[in-house]
Image 1: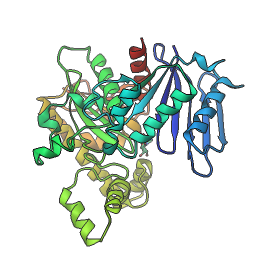
Image 2 (image 1 turned 90 degrees about the vertical axis):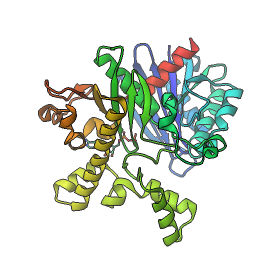
Image 3 (image 1 turned 90 degrees about the horizontal axis):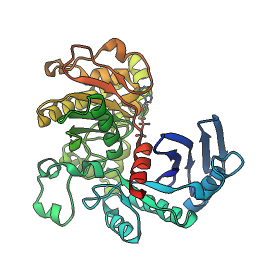
Image 4 (image 1 turned 120 degrees about the vertical axis):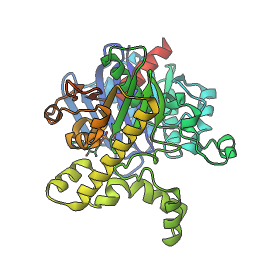
Length: 397
Ligand code: ADP
């Protein structure tokens, strides 16, 4: 079984050809700057370490996918014929309230996804374009949609409702949806395996990358998460502000005479780490600057980890305890400093990080808690593409 996993953005297309049963990755790569001058193509075959990187004109997603398919079947390809692709799995950002699990994509389902475009105007149209292009260039193969929001559809109303006029929910669908669901699902699943799959479990997953979110997963189901109607709510992120007083946005907009688009960009692209540190949005730069005595870098790290810690404690309270805290994403998997500072002061909850183990770099899933810790602490490498491939296999079977 070979599943082509597609993550299609407005100007990029990430792909992987995977066997979901054996987890073997045959090929992996990226088309970047689609429709922009200087389009880039990357292709890698993990089994042979073959790598290809070239500039290639890709005016639209169609040329990008054509290049992917020609490379997969070409001289350095991993399949002889495109018919060896059994199915295509697509990442779809927003499934609204309709899509609570992954689905087989057809005209009707795609119209349903399109109805949620308003909720994710930057992502959903691009995701759907990826689906249509695959249907055209790989005809006759099933396409499956896997939603970022689906895993969080198990949240109870008390967690997902905003205390706004009720009609804003019924008429405009304004509520908390949550994102990064594929990653939270993968990590929480692995956490439950590590716990020995008990009948009842309480897991907190911290997905910390450029975008960051935390979820509370009780008995395998998401019961709360930090992102909201959009991926702006919650933690302080690379360039996103996360939780602020909503009135602050209106105040800044009025005082600085900004348009809606400008205030939106200020909160989504100029805030977070970048907003406070000002020199970069990258956590590695931030840590190096802090080492060098940069006070703003130290402040940004204090703010970021204070918020992570507060979310962890509140989710433990929401679930009536916690068995395991997991860190994933580029920062969660790699930064011992952020993990350590995020857990500082949580000893009252029985959280004890083994600093010696935490400071050693190791790949894969690693237990980071002490033997006496009441709460297990792990770093777990996330794998959203594998979840998409597995869901695709389950549906086409
Ligand atoms: P995205 O949300 O774009 O998928 P990633 O999950 O790739 O993001 O995470 C990117 C973040 O991970 C960046 O802030 C980067 O600095 C951080 N990161 C990667 N490696 C390290 C490291 N060794 N130490 C600290 N931060 C790291």
